[in-house]
Length: 290
Image 1 (tube, one colour):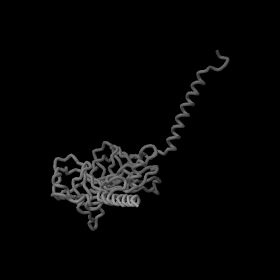
Image 2 (image 1 turned 30 degrees about the horizontal axis):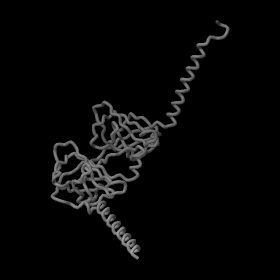
Image 3 (image 1 turned 120 degrees about the vertical axis):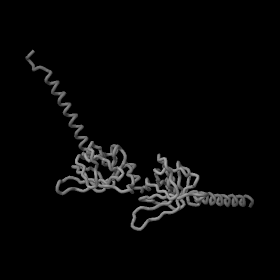
Image 4 (image 1 turned 90 degrees about the horizontal axis):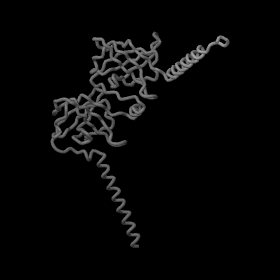
């Protein structure tokens, strides 16, 4: 009987400790651990997509908690979420050009706001506004990045649109990034066939802060890596005039298909082989003329 009692006691203690461990983990992955402490000041940021971000979620700098999410709201008539961040007063030197990014703890953890410091000499005060933000990314966009699509910055400050015509856009699709010097400056807003010119008309939405791009710049469709997604690269020209909303990029370079690359390689290889064969044949004098 004593042995059975000891087994029962051991099983009971195991169950108790198991529930205690689950309760501890629950407090570490929910807002219970993120309760506000001490004096604070409030700043706000706007996001295109907040995902599963919740009130009282932590705000972190370099992985260290500096505050929490105070409120999340959507103003009538606007398609961006307004997020107010309560920052502990002892962290009062956050540059005004810092970036707010929504991250996820681990693979399936809760989401939080991470602050990436800028280089401005002025600091955010109570009621300040973070202009630079990067929203949470759905699984589809994460998979697109994995296959080389690249990230596209949120153009909350507005954008202007320009068009470009290509004889072949390959697998270019809406939402693909527009890059300059390898940095995303916008996205592809529309891809459609022109029934008159019989080519593809691509509309590019470029972030308004990149408003000094020369109007004689060239647009090319490139591929990220060997089999990655395609994007539009802008190669700046030298004109003193800048692109404006509604302008057209005249200089374009279409997508190069894998079949074309293989064909060029085979043609170049065969032509060089033929030239060598011809040279060897001409160097041998005809028989009987020694």
